[in-house]
Image 1 (cartoon, rainbow, N blue to C red):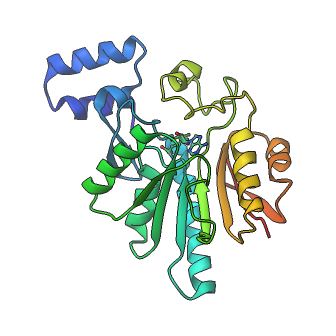
Image 2 (cartoon, rainbow, N blue to C red):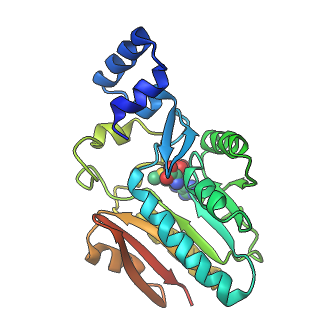
Length: 245
Ligand SMILES: C[S@@+](CC[C@H](N)C(=O)[O-])C[C@H]1O[C@@H](n2cnc3c(N)ncnc32)[C@H](O)[C@@H]1O
């Protein structure tokens, strides 16, 4: 949805309010923060400065998660247990849960404020979503290997963008640790998550968004996995599907 349409919906016909919101956006504020909501896969989610603004491109990540989860369910003969790493406001995990209500969904995030917002969104959608504050996988019991871990961890830097409208300034207004890796590495959060999964000897399937990063960079990041491939579910977005063992 174009951002002006989002603001029009938020203003609900109040022209003075609309003008005020347009002025805030013109001054550089991201429109979903001004509107107070975002639309993702046809669902409405509350959003504010407590959490990252979901990139619409990650709808393609959700498509891959649903397809891989269906395959796992058929192989396992039961509903799979999924963990979203970096759940943010909850839009991805809740979309998965709405599409597959019998799957078990857990959302992890390092950021307590984002988790509070995810809890609000889960409640607004009436879905059960277990939410845990965790630095990487540290708060997940070692004996609780998920069937699938998915996510859109922070990646890239100021040059790695989906489009010109969402530039570095856009992403720098999001909470700390949410948009780009803190250490400036393009894939350092992915690398640490993959290493943590391997260290646990989990047979978990990883489904991770690398956005617009080049294949060679993704291949380097995936190198420690036993078996992996890069899916390109939509133009300009790459998703790693791999297993530690
Ligand atoms: C790009 S945002 C994606 C948020 C959400 N999945 C979405 O698409 O709206 C990345 C998320 O990862 C979280 N994160 C970053 N480092 C983390 C860590 N070490 N452990 C857990 N979560 C982390 C951030 O707080 C942020 O919510």
